[in-house]
Amino acid sequence: MQFLVGVDEAGRGALAGPVAVGVAMVPRDFDFALVPGVKDSKQLSPKERERIYALARGLQKEGLLDFKVAMVGAEMIDRVGITRAVALATARALYRLSCNPAFTDVRLDGLLHAPPVFIRQQTIIRGDQTEPVISLASIMAKVTRDHHMVRLACRYPLYDLARHKGYGTLLHRDRLAAHGLSDLHRRYFCKGFCQGTQVAE
Image (tube, rainbow, N blue to C red; front, side, top):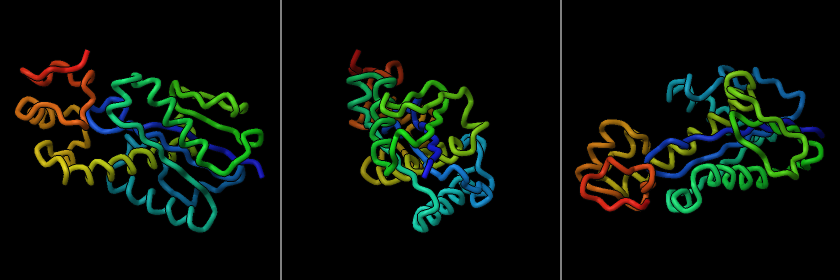
């Protein structure tokens, strides 16, 4: 069977937590009416994203589609840079799919690229807005990462992670100024937000 795979990421610009890459795999003749409302995750409310995520989980259990999400944490992002971290997460997510690269068309959002073994790949600018399979991958990545950040909020109560999910909101910047960095924070990204805190160059 030939498959279509969409790839997108979430959390690239966050100050804390991992970057997540989602991949969604569907048969070439997949009917996207089974997941109504799919579009770029940034254009959806949290409630709408959760609804589509739940639908996709159900379809996954029925064997009608598959998706994987891979995450790379702050320490690795600081070590190799965000571009390489996203590439690493992309490769991990794609290799977790049960598909033959020779019979799989991979469509990636923005500037993302799949490993060379996926010989049929296409990077599409604003693909999350024009390709439903990329939009679905975007939602899977966003919801999975959000759930992860909510779980981490219990372990790091000083930062209100459940509210901002690690992004650079005013609330988050205020918490950084008050409490400094945790091991969840991307030190390079946080330069200038932590007064009196040593941040890695």
